[in-house]
Length: 140
Image (cartoon, rainbow, N blue to C red; front, side):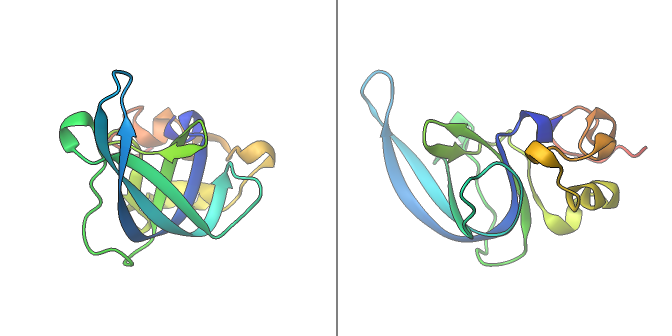
């Protein structure tokens, strides 16, 4: 389900972080951060293909901002993001998991991208991920 709802699905490493400021609908400045991602595989989205992408998130957990655990430039992550205008965004509810913690059936499914960015069957479906945003594996 998370795969189907994401506009972009990539595997990559978090390489850097930059503070940003966006204006809210009320004209107030809201702190955000931008993560630089060194992409190793694209499963869904993106034309043209590049190896560096950026994802934005609110800077504060209290407004559902994603807080990446240190260190940067470490292990690979599977990242499912949404597109808002020209920006990619993730939140505390987004599926962002270390590649080593992605269940084997899902990792195998992600290795077979299909036309239009879809990945076959249950690897990404409710059954594999339990239909929850937390991505906790519930088994077959």
